[in-house]
Image (cartoon, rainbow, N blue to C red):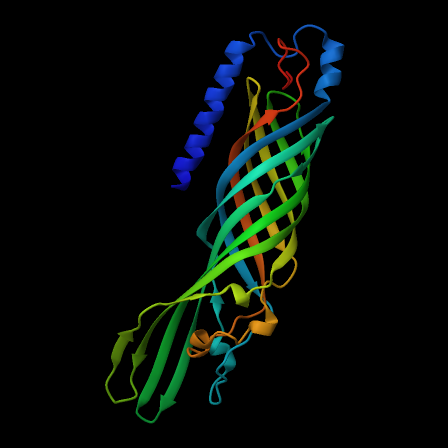
Length: 289
């Protein structure tokens, strides 16, 4: 589905570019060079992007319902997977360009996923009971980033670097837990699994968090349309866990689960197209050389 969406966006950009090229024949920067250069120094862009993201949850202080008495608590700590589950996002981009620098905001709807696992142990004279839990967390946020971009070159193909700050507003969250285990306490070894536990987890997260981001990208001019591909790294700087509600979900507490303090890291990859808002004349293309 994500691949289909990206292909559709690129096809739409190509069709729009072809249509504008037919309406406005002629090359870039044709005619009055000085006037064109001044015009191209300043431009507003608006467009849309979509893509995929990968998430890593980084634990701070760790918490659990159960406290072992005859072995190290480290054996029950959660093991967090890094950037292994793909999410998706869609953005509206508004950018002001001035002499190689761009100032941009890109309101984004982002669905992200991260996973982790843990084990619990009980022992008696007959054997050991081991419980394994696989956790998947889905979160959806409304991101509001403010970014500065710098074009490395000013040609038709424009690589750029970008950096900025963002704030993410929580929209929703769900959590699923799959349990399995091995029971050897009865003298024989028995393996078992349980039905997944799926709960709403919005109350377990703060209403929002902030962070820093940086990345690279590439613009390519097709007619009066700019096709964009970028990749960025988003580092959350504040705890996403609602510490007041850490133990509030009784179904999760029943399996010994309590959320650790967490900060989120994201790798975000997007593609899309932008449209210029300022034109010099009907026979002038606004993108540059």
